[in-house]
Image (tube, rainbow, N blue to C red; front, side, top):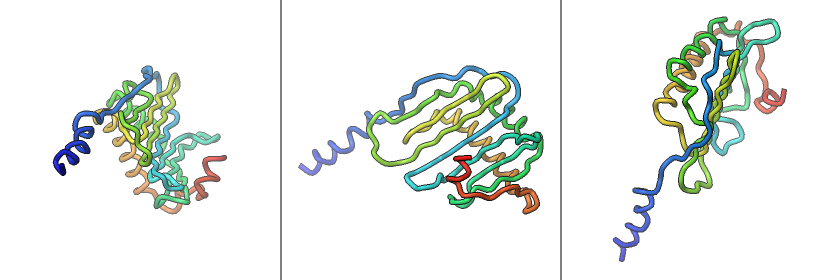
Length: 172
């Protein structure tokens, strides 16, 4: 009886759990002009948050969430940051990523992620709830995030433009 019970619990996990996806992106053209990534759980603030864009004066800015919130820190970044993000996106063919990923079974708790990139012509958008894109595409996103973190780690206090509560930041 115990064996039958254990088998009835494990069987759905062995054959029934897989990732579903939908939507597609088109290959963008030109340089990257905006990047945003968010990885969240059921907490108030995301575990990971990056946003890269130029301000009105043309200065590249990187915003990220510090220590899982509540503060977002914004720094001045080198001009080539958006160019490098675009290069990584093209190298990893992120335009082939699907728009949405989810598990084949209902999950009532867990994590979600979202990535959005805008280029001179076109954009790439993707996200998932309790599921990720194929490893090859996720590696592209992780490469961009790792690069951004290296720029952040190399920054100094003098590079900080703004420090603001996450909720206020995303509502501005």
